[in-house]
Amino acid sequence: MKKLFSVIFMNFFGFDMIIFLVAVATALVFYFTKKSADVLYNKLHLNIFVPDSGASRRQADSDISGIRETDIVSMRNRTGSLYSLFVNLTGIFPLLGILGTVISLLGMVGDMTNVQDNFYGALTSTFWGLVFAIIFKFLDGIISAKIEDNEKNVQLYLERNNAEHSQSGEQP
Image (cartoon, rainbow, N blue to C red; front, side):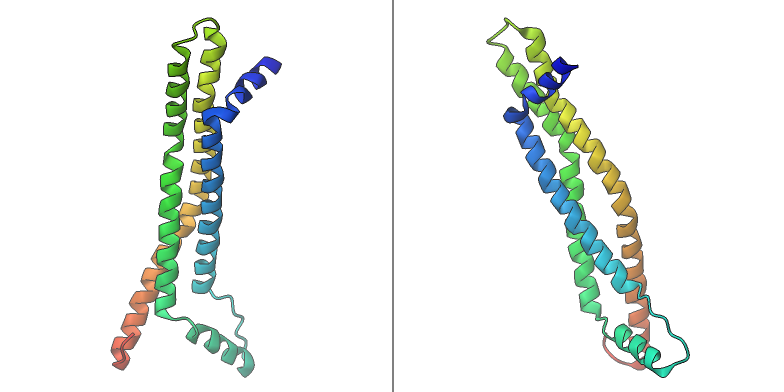
């Protein structure tokens, strides 16, 4: 067991470090994507209790009228851009793993004395690439539903907003 961990972490300060740095960057992009999606979701799904009192009704009208179409579209575009970056970063992890393995195997060609340990070390890049690909693919499954829901709700909001403005003769 000790040998397994030493082999896994042997190549850490080599090509595996690049995979870990890309994983940190991808985690940050995921955080900002989720945060942006949550803000847009909360903006589109106002949780206002409107009983019969006039004060609550005025507060609800104020909150609803404070939503501008340009803000909604801007938030949707920002969330979409962040999500696209997240998906693209997630997709490169298996490729980084394979690239690290190939680079390590090419370095082995000159030193054939300890082929078995060097071969195991070369596979660590593939291991870390696959581990991070699986983790971020799981996180993609969590956030993609909210992104899709937001997209549908923004489209519905824009259609309703345009219909209301066309009935009143105003420009949106």
